Image: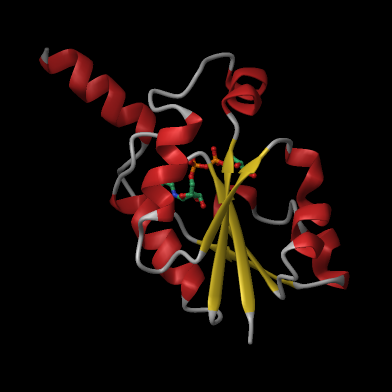
Amino acid sequence: MTTVITFGTFDVFHVGHLRVIQRAASFGDRLVVGVSADELNMRKKGRLPVFSEAERLEIVNALKPVDEVFVEESLELKREYILRYDAQVLVMGDDWAGKFDDFGDICTVEYLPRTPAISTTALIEKISSTS
Ligand code: C2G
């Protein structure tokens, strides 16, 4: 039984998010997803996500490839989360390429290419410019 873990904000959920989750699941038998806390987004990006932490968790948890979700409280806790969920594979988008190679001592680290031409920021801009 291979457990895969991945992380993200997954705000204004779109097909780029779906594809990374589907591809992450294909690396093992069980997929655990850390959804970043509202507070973590506030610290990191200086704004709250459009959808609350509870809503983002609910959406990600409802996806067929996802077995378990939890709140990612801090970017610095990845090693603890990998060990806590007994993950053998860590999947991250390639915007993080090389950043988590240190965890190669406890799991395999895979960086996946992002889906081009779609992002939460672009969607927010598109929606606000058409309203
Ligand atoms: N993603 C993608 N293609 C896009 C947009 C996003 O493949 N066009 C992927 C990202 O690479 C990431 C996941 O979708 O794997 C979630 O993206 P974000 O919500 O932007 O996550 P981020 O804020 O980078 O995560 O520990 C990481 C933190 O939780 C932050």
